Each structure stands twice: as C-alpha cells, then as structure tokens.
Length: 100
Image 1: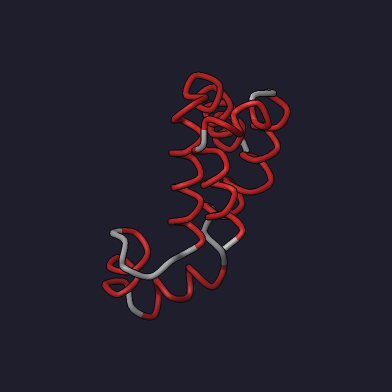
Image 2: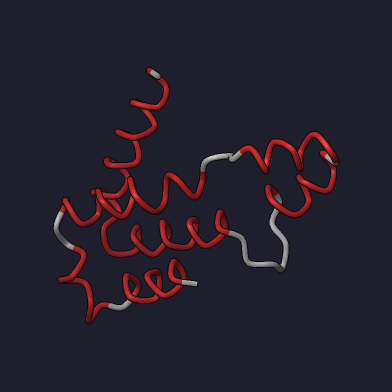
C-alpha cells in the first residue's frame, strides 16, 4: 500500500531530510495516520456483528494488512528518526480529540 511505501521511505536514513520539517510530520500525522487509526462506521458494524472476530483481526492483529496496522508501522518509522517531534504532534492531536 502507499502507507507501507511511505513507511519504508521514512525509515531510511538517506531520506531523513525529506521528513525533518515539523510541517511535513504534522501533515503525515493529521492527513494519514489519524484518519486511518480512527474507527469507521464499518468497523463499528463489524464489532457489533462479531466482537470476538473483530478483536482477533483488528485489535490484536492478524497476518492481514489493515489500514490501522500500516498506520501504526508508519508511526513507528517516524519515531525511529523523529521520536520527540512525532510524540509531541501525536499528543497534540490526542489532546484536541479529547476536548471534542
């Protein structure tokens, strides 16, 4: 997927300069990571239909590639080179979502 490709770029030291600007990290988090980590209506329906299956495949992880799993990998890749900045930006998003 495109998120997995972006993760591979962020991970590589040779591409570090492409992602070092705070505005770039902010855009990745707000436009890619957060939307793909959020529960969608379909996720709620899957949970209501079969909570056990939902927990096994989505929350606990499975061998399948999900948008949430790819977004988590992207976040880990960002933390590899930009841990302080990524953590601060994610905390900012969590704080604003809690006030909503």
